[in-house]
Image 1 (cartoon, helix red, strand yellow):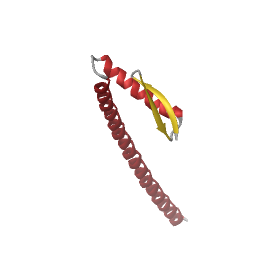
Image 2 (cartoon, helix red, strand yellow; image 1 turned 90 degrees about the vertical axis):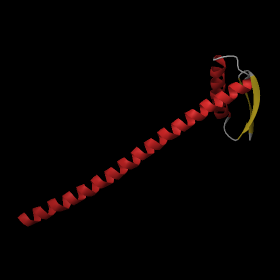
Image 3 (cartoon, helix red, strand yellow; image 1 turned 60 degrees about the vertical axis):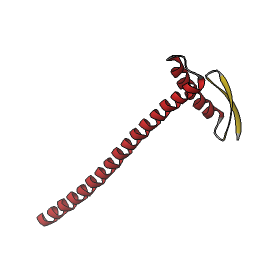
Image 4 (cartoon, helix red, strand yellow; image 1 turned 180 degrees about the horizontal axis):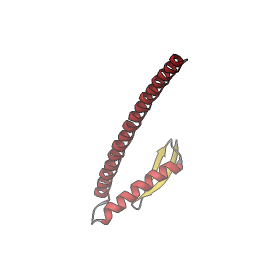
Length: 104
């Protein structure tokens, strides 16, 4: 476990994490930018801005999760289609072989 000091909306926090310092800083940077973006919209407390930022991050997460699921589904469909085409190709080759042998 490592301790990493990060700054979010002007407040320092000590994070304890197994992940690399760079990763923790990237996460904190993302939260910081979201909180600051929300705070630009009006006079909100840091706590209220944190809640709204958390909602924005949750929205981003769920949208990305849905996009990821859609991509997984497309890949699965493509793999199934490729397998079907491979089977059809094999069958066509067998038929060609049979026809060629009948001519001989």
